[in-house]
Every structure is written in structure tokens, then in C-alpha cells.
Length: 507
Ligand code: GCO
Image (tube, rainbow, N blue to C red; front, side, top):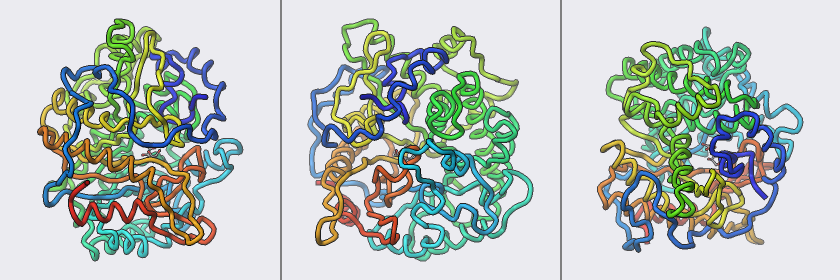
């Protein structure tokens, strides 16, 4: 069984070039739509032998035994992450406009359990107690997202002050508890009105995004030390525009790469807008990145396929922002499929804004065989796209330093779903998640020891939430949410994480 409904779909199609090749990609899509309902086949703990060396890292000894206990520097930002559509609910409250996810989730057949984010974890009404919960766990940094259509119901134009007020109140609570707010401006919930005008295929959306950035920076900016622009543009390009199982539900490679270019342009323009409104704030993007390993290092076909896949998965997003250019091998490969990026004069300069902080989401490595065939080498979690290989985060982080220089990195997401349910006493013993997070933190510490600058770690997620096309069937939170009563119960992983934070050490 393969999982084509999430970010791993390209791996599973086994078609490296399928990123661009609409026909083959679309042909491969229908085969396994139901795969997300397949339960986990393995426990989410790191195991297995070290794979072949990842592309572009020369000598990362990914299997080296990490030294424990791992003590982190004082001031390390221990955090947790969420996003607006996944937790807020209140989908039409107080003047909020519709987003593409409101539209998509309401279409029959799009979400595996038929659910929506209309109510989600009802955070819109429970933000104060949610912040208090975070404080009780000792969390120091909270990454959340701002809903663009809550601030600008039509995406542009009139500001909805009730939407602004919600985030002001949230920020007040965070400040009261001395938790650092780290807002993301776009976690996929593009205003539907802008989608109706072409969404990210339309260049104007990048400009509207920068205007939205200015509004929130002016209205909310006091006391926000760090801003994140886009979350995982790659997932939207791939899953939203190529495969179509996320909003906006397109299956069109030409649209996908136009959207990609405009997303990166939006990042550049919004960064400039934020910096002009709030010169001392740190600004960066959030990219989901992965080390790409050839399944067999002695196979030249596998090595070449892994290199190209690395272009599509990593360099396509990193290079414009950090180097001011698109990777030539990917541009050439796209051209083979008659896809040309809609680059205008000055675009690459506008995208080349660097990153005060590079937000990295890491969940899983990618292992590629000859001809681009994806190889599942490690156990997966309930999310069958997620192969568990903790040294992958070490390989990724050391590679970033090697290829992109000494950028300050913050891990903005890392985690795993767990199917462990409350026991008779109501406790949730999600030891599988503890194993996952611990093993990744040990490898993170190893990367820091080897000279990578990493300022913080945000576990995904603070609480169970609406997991996109998987609805409420996957629980990624360190806090259990009873979606009937909306009661919150910290899981064993939350208590464990709280201990990590208070001791600043992973044992
Ligand atoms: C993403 C997001 C999160 C997910 C998480 C688990 O990458 O999809 O940033 O919203 O919920 O990654 O899949």
C-alpha cells in the first residue's frame, strides 16, 4: 500500500520526473487514495541500518552513536506548533471570510472521515486555557498561524478588526505567560476570494500577501520577535496542485509550478514588507526538507535519481531564497515537460531575501532507487508517508550548513501520530511518540555539537487537530483532545517533554 494523499506521494509514485510529468503523475494518482486509512505497519521508533550517503553531503556519518545525555544550551527555545485551520474552528465567526480549506473540506469525498475544520479544537474560543496549558508544561515558544481570511475576509481590502482582536488577545495571553509568539502568515488557508481570482497561479496573489503582511505587522507587531511567512509551500505545490488531494484540489503541473514561483515571490515580498514595518524582527520561511538517499550508492541510476529528487524536494525552495537562483537541473527537467517558470525581471532578486531564521520541518527521509523508484526502507508511523529515521535530521541539518552556510535554523515541526488511546484512568501512554521525539532530539543535539546553529525546536503538535485530508483520524498532539467535549488531556509525551524542557536535557 502506498500513500499518495500526503507529501510523500511523489516518493510512492516512484516517478522522479512525475513532479513535472502531468500525464504519468495523474495516471498514478487514483491507485491508492484509500491508503491513508491503512493502519500503521510499524512502530515509530528509529531503527534499521544506515542508508547510503545522502546526496550532497559528503561524509556525514549518520549512524554514529550519539552521546547521551544531551544537554542543550540555556535559552534554547523549546516550543510547540499548531496552525489556524487545524485548531481554531470558528470558521465563520466574527466576520471571517472563507479559505480554500473551508471550501475543500466541505466538498464531499475530500476528507477521509468526512470531517471539516469548522470547529476543530475550538481554539478560537479556548485560546486562553490553551496558552495556560502550554505554560504549565513549560513551553517557551509557540508557533501558530494567522488566518489570512480572518484578518482580510476577501484577501485584500477591508480589514476585519474582530479578527485582529482575536490575535491580540492570544498575544496578550502569551506575553502574560512569557511564551515567545512565532506567527506564520500562511499555513495553507488562502482566502477563497483570491482563489476565485486564480489563487497562487495569479501573480497578484503574491502582492496581496505582502499587503496582508504589512497589515498584521502594523496591527500586531509589537512584541513579536520572529515572523514566519509561508509554511511548506512544497506540500501545497505537490499535494494541492499536482496530486489534488489537498486544497485547492488541482491536478495540473503547469499550475503547480506557476503557483510555486508565485509563492516564493510572495515570501520575498512579504519579508521585505515585514522588515520595513518591523525592522528588528527576525523573518524567515518554513520549508519541509528531507535528506534524499540513493537506495544503492553503487547504482549510478539511483544516485542520479536521488540528486534530481533532491532538487525537487529541497533545492527548488532553498536556492531562490538563499542563493538567488533556481537549481539548473530542475529547471532543465521541467523544461523537458514543457514547463517554464513565470519569472519576470527582478523576481529572483525579490526572492533572494535570505533568512534571519530558516524554519525547518523534518519528519522523514526519502530513499530513491534507480529510475526514481521510491524505496520504503524504514518503519512508518500511522502516516504511511512518514518513514522513521532519526539520523536523517542530522544529515539534513549538517547538509544545510555545508551547502547554504551558517544560517540560523529553528525546527518548526517534528513529530509523529500515535494511535494510543486513553486507558481506563484516562491517561494516554504514547510512548511511541516519546521514542520518536527523543531520538530526533538526540540527533538534533548532535548537529548542534557539530556546529550547526539551531535556536529552537517546536514539536508538532501542541494538541490533536484536523490533519488535513486525514481529518481527525490521525492524532499528532502531545495533548489529547476529546473532540466531543473539547476536553484537553496532556499525554505522557507532554509530561516527558515538559521534563526535557525543565532539565534542558534529553536522556
Ligand atoms: C504539514 C503541516 C502540518 C501537519 C503536520 C503533520 O506539514 O502538513 O505543516 O500542518 O499537520 O506536518 O502532517
